[in-house]
Length: 354
Image (cartoon, rainbow, N blue to C red; front, side, top):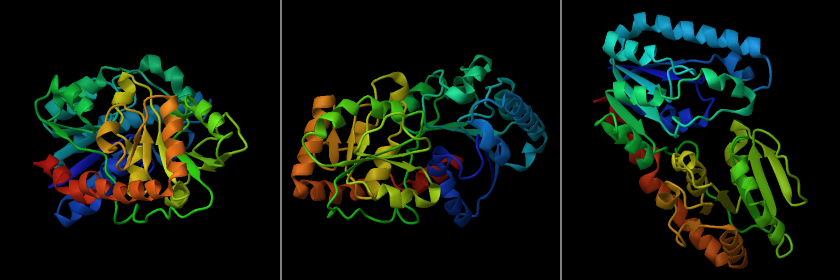
């Protein structure tokens, strides 16, 4: 068997690719399955994609990627399955799903982990939104032999047009990557958040909580992000995201936060922040949105916070009771190993190609 993975970004460049399928490549090899990976954006294109301006450079690289996707049609014959993560191309050209699934007769495995049918774009590329076909997700679900979705909300969307839908959670490599545990015996109490410039708005929603806490307890707010936050406090420590130091940086946290707003886009989230925290023995405090309420068991391995009062209350409770912190910490790892690890999900993932 041979599989073609079609991805938006170069190998290991994006978390959604790393934690949804790239970490299963070794398992595929062990099962005698061959594969190729062809990203839409080249390494060079990836470097400028989320920078401001350079419209000409982006357009040229976009056209280059589209031509490659078109000519790819002629080499699909050597593959048994085509695994498409999120999209075939950034514009969502309707021709491609039909061409690959119908004209080439390929079995398409369509995988997604966000509510990507809802219009959403980074500030640096907002000008391209008017050219994008936002119905593309539905088209890919319709033409797919099988759909792999990261939570039940996403599964339900796909089931409107496809009966062959598999719940395939985002998972953590608890052996090769997230393989250490936080030492909770620390003098400094660190409240942590990790994410991108596009999601830091959720953290900004609960900034009043930290302002109130600052008058009650000593703490550090550690923010791991690809861009420096627009806010600044004496208790803030900005840590630029770096793949090489990601685990070490996360292990600075005593607790990890995942605030979200209740909307359709947030319901499509797959709880990745919480999964990362908990795999390292870091209790997660999360908003009661989407899959978060399945990952975090309230009072057992973290807390579910409905409003700013609860964010403040539970952070204070954990700070004041270090035994509670250690108890929560001990239970987080087991939850990930049982339900959200590569080991627990390998057979489910390989089963997609059957």
